[in-house]
Image: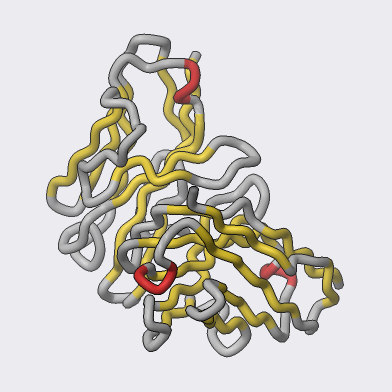
Length: 118
Length: 110
């Protein structure tokens, strides 16, 4: 069974840092592009970042470039999102997702909540 | 403002056919395929259509999708109460050099 389990969400002060993790199982992790997608409760989906299966190529949305950094460890079947200089509009539910392409998300985790306080 | 434009809401009665549109341009839908996601409140989204018109296993064949030019659409035949959810389209945008979602459509079954 495919499982993606996010962790690391917390309440953090504006300007602070946080590291999200996503533990993957049930599929060949290194063969999948991995994604972070966020959603403010009650709002739409926003793509945050993605990283190729071998970790050599990554994309970040302009709104997070230089502040949020996606990475992966294929030995541990783990995905990460290092978050720094957090802003109020970074507060959201962050989903980890696995895809067979750069914009096809086949599997999703349940999400981890990041709250940014003033 | 989303790059892909969806109507914020759609509705129908049980048994009806409902369609949800997704409008883009030649930077995205015009030259890239479209995927659709279904999301229930409080639950993670689920891939419902990939590569314009392909259904993953487990998705009812009441759901179909198509793409024409710079627009795509999701159709639901024989609408059922359990279809009430948000639906999001997604594609790749060559100008932004990144993936994009539509703003989402809330489907209500009356």
